[in-house]
Image (cartoon, rainbow over all chains, first blue to last red; front, side):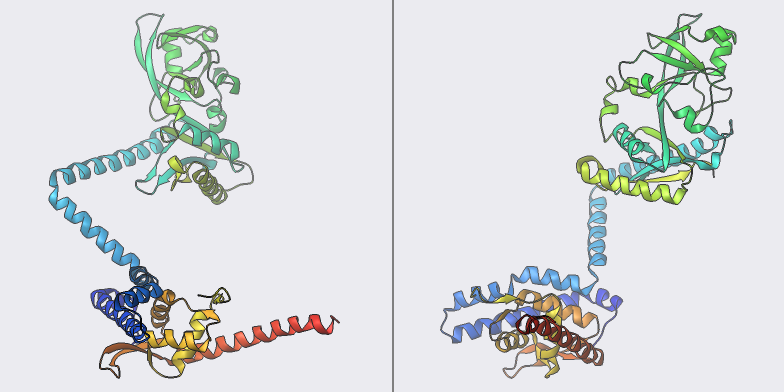
Length: 332
Length: 115
């Protein structure tokens, strides 16, 4: 009788019993035949099992042939999970709580970035701006890139120009009252990727965006007004930030935000040797922004990112196995 | 297991199974025996792949199976060909014949000299 998939799945216990019966019939027949030929019973049984190629292995292959394997495994895993949850309600509660908080926070973060990052300023050709995301098998999509992955994608991609930033902050002093300010570490090309320029001075050069380069900073329009009276002479002035002297090279446009206001912007890679997260492929903490290169569209960028992710997964299986990469329009 | 035995070419096991079953309902063990005898020990029929293949063919609707008593009074699973199965056997057998003819032609060519 021909059974459909559902029947095969719902009658799996019966099918297992039949498989067992079928194979033991085979073994008995073969054993009996070998005994007839004068082989000792114990040896005959051994040879019969050997000829069949390991009954357990054969059973496994027969189960695969049934085509219901994935559902059976899923069911078994689910049952196992539920059993564990029942036995360990405290753990379950905490796990659920952490998961919901994590998912909630990520969602909020994304919503916040979408609205806050973009509303204040309109970027030229903002429909070509993308946010890049990674996804792992266990957790799903995340916003963060590791610094190494960011560097590799930036180097290999033909379809997008890439920039990155992350949160920072510290005390500024030297002028008036010491004050804690929010900061951001940004890659040198963040401004050019977004398509904006400082109102005075300049953005960072690639040479400044590396470890050991002279410490330079851009400041917000607000801080410029507050502490420097909006004077152009602020360019080239020193700024003591986190106890270190920086030279101010540019003033960000009024209203420029990266997930909220920040007053001090410093080159991302200058942190490379002091921040261990910068040297760890598993530390996925960078926000990656990108602009489509002329002549490419979103779907082409996605294909390329998927390929690069695959290539990185082969090259760095320990950190990148199962890691996917994709892009979304920054402005919906 | 003499070294002269060859492995089955890819895709032929299903064909051989269908052929054996076409002669009348049989159980798995008898199929294994018949394959062994008929091939005169030239090809190695991997017993381990026999049952997965049977189950696969059954799922594809090429075979049907019933539990029946053997001559010795034991219950065994007897396989028989469905209409779809005998159709498949015809097609595959014809395909193989064509391939064999073509290969024979090519091998024969070397003796008579290429034209």
